[in-house]
Length: 134
Image 1 (spheres, rainbow, N blue to C red):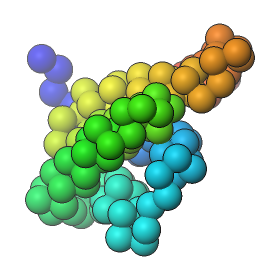
Image 2: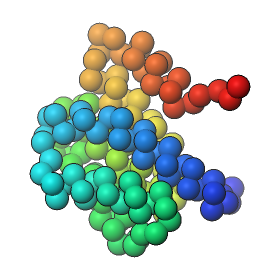
Image 3: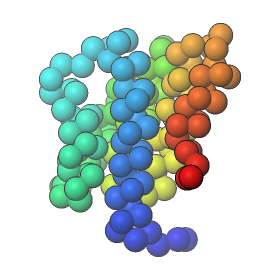
């Protein structure tokens, strides 16, 4: 198994959080989050995880809250996948490979949000997720 450097892990955490944040509106639209719910899902993935200053209990709590939200949203695929993206994104602080789960679920959320245009929208998001360097 590959050992990630601290900088690699911070980069993956930031990328995973960005992937999840891009689709979180699907969850919020279907299941509006109160201030506490929004903070629980986004605060650890935002500031603490990106800076490397966080409590693992906060990360675990945020990830579990996101996956609980996904179970509640199971009737709305876009919302469910957005919640899963958030859960995977937050968990990247603990296990770097979770970043790929955040990206994957973000793609699924985008496809589910607009099935008629899924192929085009998913391709556009995938291009954003995997930019090429100049």
